[in-house]
Length: 427
Image (cartoon, rainbow, N blue to C red; front, side, top):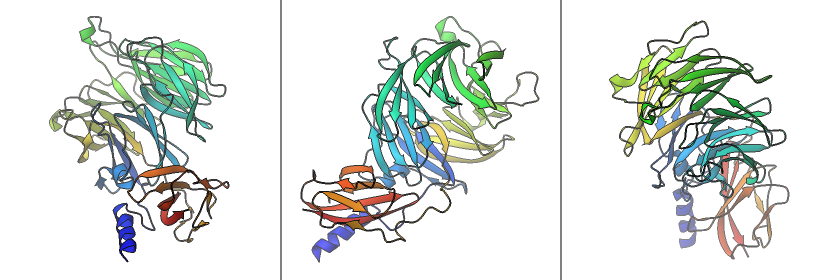
């Protein structure tokens, strides 16, 4: 009886129920955390306006999230979080946030992520003091391993994919870049370099046109240059024009709804309409009334404007949500340094609930290979102390457990928007 009671307590402690919480109708807030503090976190704001903090920790009580969360992306049923301080990419189930894998080799100072085909592409600074070791890491999404790298110039930051080509903005690391690298994702090779304005930081696509927002050099460099907006035809990579901002204006955080452009300057949010013939002179939103000095994170998602406030850079951050007319809708207290906002992928209609299908594992007890009666799932095996001892995507070959010590384990099975747990004895 004591053994049964103990197992029941473990199950409850880890939240292993027949149905996992899913995240599909709302926005994730990526909280960077302090560098070296290992306190990055993930928040979730539902479409109904309900905030949940530390949602990764809730889904993975035995797993550490990481140090300095830089960016996030989604591909298929998985989410990918890039950690600058941890030099890793954390792979999670996109709807349950359950840990699937971690890419920890081949990444040095990783920043941002993009996808094409069966690969992910992560910009990496390498040694920030070395101007010649920067690269884009190519990750095989089937194995979650870095399979190759593409050398680029200093300071690769934002990366975006369009029609099989990857565009990388070179902010310049600790220098001040003014180029855009073009990579061929079909061959994983460098194609060419385009010259844009000083310090390019943001990229968006409207139709087949690439818009590149450049901050310009700040005043403290003693070589200040204004920001600029470049428009490039992705078909032949020809520049279609450039717009210069006013003196001492340094725009960043470019976003689009497919027609208008949104960006920030200091504590102001600006909107450039498709019909405008010149840059706006007045902000759509000013955050000064909210006590916000500058914008730390910014996104336009489903006709809502999300702004992250770093506050004092060590306390819990704030998020302000506006409509596209500039009206404040809500505000939230989230984790430390909210630097990014990402729309949660929609749960695919018709995904089967494996708990409802009474998924079983066999043989049990098992000596070498454990099988699950499902076509595709993520399998995480815990010991009774709550430590993850094995995790991998399930295939018809089963899960090899021969290397684990004999004893009782908890096997968590995640598929789509559901999860279940089984007790397994390894002999």
